[in-house]
Image: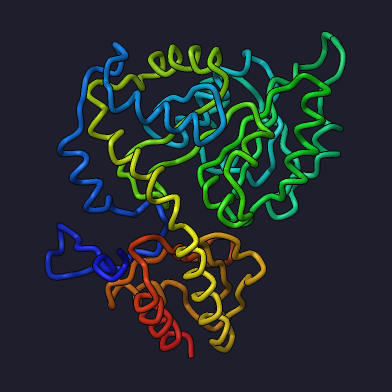
Length: 356
């Protein structure tokens, strides 16, 4: 698959072929996905009669080990829909201070759900269960908010995978206090690949889970929110309220089915390529790679102080390689199905020439 799809053609610059390492959100649909979109059976999903959407939701629920699932436009939509459906206005939501919900979702929980986030300092994405329990509001004091939800993230946005033992300990705490857990599982299949386990071994520790189909799984659009049947029924109502009702969405659900049935099986290749990329970068003098954090398809690294990051990204762009500049002092490169070893070697060569 990678041998025939290493580069991306950019429509507004037809003579330039791009390698895109900014994220796994940039993945384009596979040829099989495009064919499935063209032939998909469709209906009207607001009426509940789009057969392809129904098939996707049933498949996703089964794979994620939940009673039901709902097809939603984006990962942020899925996370915020979960918060909106779990919580009452004024509730408190416990989450890691570096979680996607806190950092990268535009303060949506406050705007949409009227909740406040109670954040906990994480250890590179791992939120200590004892710290979670210490922040749970106990009793019915009229001065304090209700703890409405605990939010976890696995795999974390920093590329690390949270251990199953930590998930289990957090779940036990949540059950004791009768508080639901939502998992931002945008890359939960990557996490399962790293842990060499069925994804259900992760999701069994949470009440609801969101997973993205449009990241490393290469579907062009969409995410899944899965959980108990009664929760998903309420979430379906809330999805419509938030403007997320689909019509002939089968054309988008069809590639989502292939994302789950085919693309989940090859994520190990992306992980192996990320480790290869990390090794190649680490061999460049002055570059410091977070090698121990390469659990999935992300490589974070720091440049020598003498290197101008803007000049580096410009040098990469001149060679048809897209990369984001440093974030928090480090650059991130992300592998996906359209990145192979030749692509990596070409990228590393440009970085080496620009930094030495």
